[in-house]
Every structure is written in C-alpha cells, then in structure tokens.
Length: 203
Image (tube, rainbow, N blue to C red; front, side, top):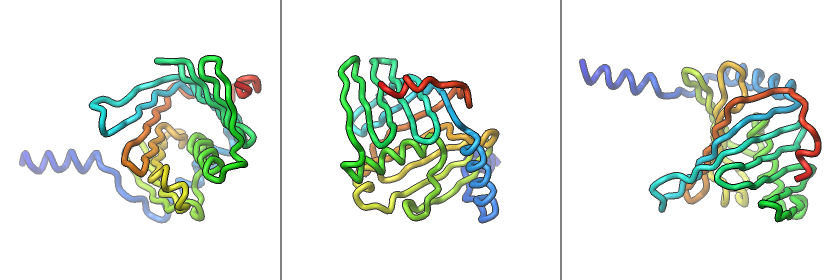
C-alpha cells in the first residue's frame, strides 16, 4: 500500500504528452494571448546552473517587452546590468559601460535574438526551426523545443517553455546548453498592456 501511494504521488506530479487536439487548442490559446499582449513587464529570478558549482548562480531584476520585438532585461541583484534586444540590435549597459551588436551581421546572433524574444512572447511554435513536443501538467503546460539549425544547436541544445494554464503566458524559460549546463528564468508579478516608455529600450 505504501509503495502504491508513493507511485501515485510520483505519477500525479508528472506531465503527460498532449493529444493532437490538446496541442491545437493550446497553440490557439497562446497565439490569441500573444496577439493581445502589446506590452509585458515582470520581475524575474534567473538561475545559472554550472556542473562544476555546488550552487546555482542567482540573479534577479525586471523584464520589459513591447511588441513586436523590443525586449529589455534589467538585472538589479547582485549587480546592475541591462541588455536590450531591438530592431536587430543587442544593446548592453554594464554599469554605465555601453556596447552594441548588430545581429544582422551574424546568423547565430539573429536566431538567438529571435529565440529570446519568442520565449517571452510565447511565439516560438515554428516547426521549420524546431522539433517541438508538448506536455500537460496540473497547473502548467510545457513546450520542449529542439533547434534544427546545426549552428544554433552548438549553443542551445533545448528550450523549455512553461506556460500558466490560467493565462497561457510564459512563466518559466529554461535554456539548456550543449554542455548540459542551463539557465532557468522564473517570471512573476506580471503586468500586461501597461504603458512602457520607449526610452527604456535605448539603454
């Protein structure tokens, strides 16, 4: 009986693969929410897992998104650092030291830029770019994406997006590297469609 209870608890916490009809309904819901989301502001906590460290590196801050592709990550703890993705450029402000990169000069940077923005907006369901699998849990749905592009695969082995079943928005992003190290970003305190000043994305 004890073994049965333990197995039941384990099964209860597991995800199951979505059916074809569930995938279709899920994608429609995410797409509808994505189209309605003009801006998104949220707090986040980022965990960087490296195999040679006993404890994950934890950073936190605020993320701002403005459709169609303006995205800012503002790290506040334990240091001040911001990175902006906008109009094919990556703008970095490291405690006042500014630099910029044009993603148009690099195919891999362009793909990573699209990947990061798509992770936030939930707009990553491209079967041409990824092998995608869909899983259903009790309070969340998980989409696992494996890049088809060989160059991108050298950096990102798999992307996992966790969606809240209440609002169909991304609540967690996990980027797994080819080395099996990974970055996990947990979002909370979301504010949708509030006004965001364009100056935020000038860095």
